[in-house]
Image 1 (cartoon, rainbow, N blue to C red):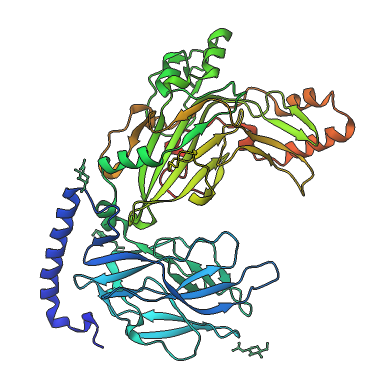
Image 2 (image 1 turned 90 degrees about the vertical axis):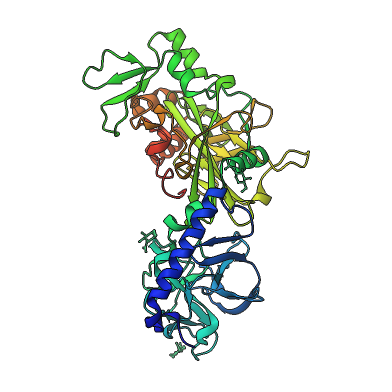
Length: 519
Ligand SMILES: *[C@@H]1O[C@H](CO)[C@@H](O)[C@H](O)[C@H]1NC(C)=O
Ligand SMILES: *[C@@H]1O[C@H](CO)[C@@H](O)[C@H](O)[C@H]1NC(C)=O
Ligand SMILES: *[C@@H]1O[C@H](CO)[C@@H](O)[C@H](O)[C@H]1NC(C)=O
């Protein structure tokens, strides 16, 4: 079969054709996007999500404890559509349902490979093939077959290379027993595999897709109304959120390192996190307590909207600001132990993220930030109100404000279920914040949303801790029996600095997840 590119004399014809396509894409963007229509068209390709697969071969786990993987190929494709590579699922309990993108050529953007090279084969007879694209094209995935014969050239399509860009590989989902440097990775955006020795992952060129497929402000408003979380605070929570302006207007102070003894009321300056400025509570104790308690009626969830998975999905991030993060509490078997001031800090930013597919407009996953990391949760694992609505609950832990999808107790730093850890405790029955009624979109670069000035404040939202962790620990431990003393000492020594609150916290824009993916 002739590839598109072998028709070089028609180059100028193609060039003309491509400009036409380009105009078509511009027109779509003006109409407000193709969000939730089932397919995404951009730069001469129509993409769809596909969920019907044929099982090709299963590869055994590398070592006991590792997971094996099953390799799939898209089947029953709609007419005109082609696969872009094989799909794979690791044999772990929490793998999501198989899904891969398929593509239809609308404007000279797809081409069959000109050949396949065998990359690797296993004894369990899985054969890994790299497609060789024609010039000007690139493969979005590799192929796995169960026979040593080359796959037919027509089995997949390559994309015009400017539609793709390389991106960082995710952790491998499988590696080979005989050569563990050969690894297989799954592309989040395409749902295809790439295999080899440290192969770069291929993603969709973000600059082409973003505008075409993202929701516009009308659609964002609808998504927030339908899916935004109910945020549940602990019934005993003394440190609630507030709006940023409430914090600024109620006496929070701006310190500068050139004159650290003369703080100013806040009009925070923009700039980088260079230690030149930080925020703190007001100095008189009464106002300090007022500010620490926060002010729920003023609080808004600050929303950041960004493209993800190469622009095939949208992340809606809800940021909450708390003037104060309370001290940590430890559990040692049956005892709850207040850890003095350990873990306390001024200025606490926490978030949950809802991820929507731009193909069908549905929420696919929700992320709960827990201290400096967090976890993605499938919609079926979320807790909804009994009225059948689609708005999930998010629970904030007492004092620390980490987010969890369900109420309960989690012990941080616990070793081998010994019942000793820092308490992340959430419960029902406390104050509830309606994130649909109390939220404001503060950033959506692709929509040109104007950002509030405080978002440009890149320095610390609280001072470095003013207490000595060892001294605080001594105070707490004085009253503990010897065995418990050792247990608490060991626990605190293995906690990350972040949980102990030793660094002043930075604002949302300084977090790695603002531009990148959730960790
Ligand atoms: C968003 O897109 C929808 C559907 O194309 C359209 O009806 C609506 O007017 C658009 N809204 C804005 C603010 O562009
Ligand atoms: C399969 O395994 C056997 C025994 O371990 C080995 O001798 C043989 O070379 C392997 N074959 C392939 C294709 O890896
Ligand atoms: C992605 O698309 C943009 C806009 O057309 C283009 O300038 C850029 O070169 C493309 N990236 C790659 C890696 O081809």
